[in-house]
Image (tube, rainbow, N blue to C red):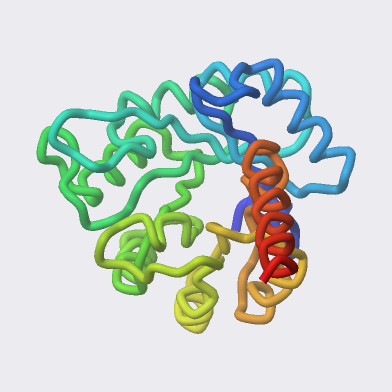
Length: 234
């Protein structure tokens, strides 16, 4: 196991991402989020786009899981879908690269196995994080040789478990294989949910929206208040 992966052990990775239409979009903002996460004790950062990755690496000393969201016509896969996005992420300074490892159709008809081999050939020293949505996808990524498995895509493919909270069962199933460290990611909102993921065998936990998307945090508070006021009227 590489030293950079060991740094994630029993820690929390903060996902610092903002899309173009969101209020905090911009590399300076994401770097500030990463610095705040580091000050709070985070073990690592997950970041999108070469620009954000490069800025975060300049401002923050934590290891960065890099990805590059890019949409191609005819494919639902958008998390670092081709070797071109992988190259951009690595050249930006990411310590690890996260790639969609689901069974869905990929751009240009390539398979995940083919992309994996291309990454190993071109960037042999860079650990690969496989973002999966099901047990079968996770087990296949382990068999292929991926360095970390993340439950990122559970609930985001039509055939995976659809739930309001984290897919703790998937974390447990993959962790029981005891082959590759498993990262819990997706819809984690509370410290209690983090602990439940660790109880299930997670090597590390990724938290994003609950920390770095204030518009969504605000919506949860506003929604709870609205329900409370409505219940008092009834």
